[in-house]
Length: 255
Image: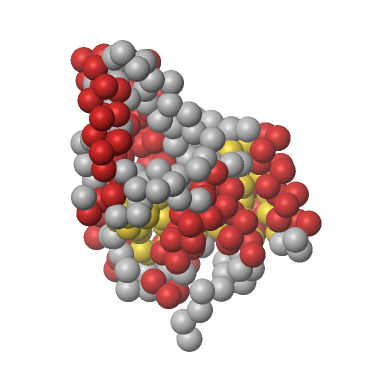
């Protein structure tokens, strides 16, 4: 029987202290999942755990920077210790760049964005895969971006990181579909989160990208709308959906 419930599932959500990650953690818990809340902000992570517990759910928090392999190891060990394993991984944590064109991008901006947006989910997925393989099933959902579908939604570093995520999703889908593991991603458009862009309005990148975004962008989505798509992709209802990048963007990708 196909079900959208997660009563027998354990779910790891990164960047779960706020925004899309928080909404996803609450949505999974509301459908019966046991949720590991991973975030850099300890207070935010514990608040989400409290919200889930107050609603009668089960959650634990792991705090740290996922670009650190030791933190990745703690996340996986925490899920195994608390829940007996991992059934769903949501690679959601990410940071924006400064909308910088490549010629304006320094090493610090590049390294930070690539480490958080690409290297961290790579390492966490690598660490979770053996548990999904042992179970013979599992779902991985990434938060990609409109910037993974076009060149006019962000700066060079963020755009490169999200295009890489799109490729990683497709490769994972092909490599592990024979082992019952599905990998998909949402590609959010503008969404009401606390992610801020520290852009220099006079720099070349923000001038170019700002004009293009302003001419094509749709409405702002809520984090809950993005979370609903994540939960669907992780659910049995999406059992034959694999390697898909799902825009959740009010038609921005269709422009």
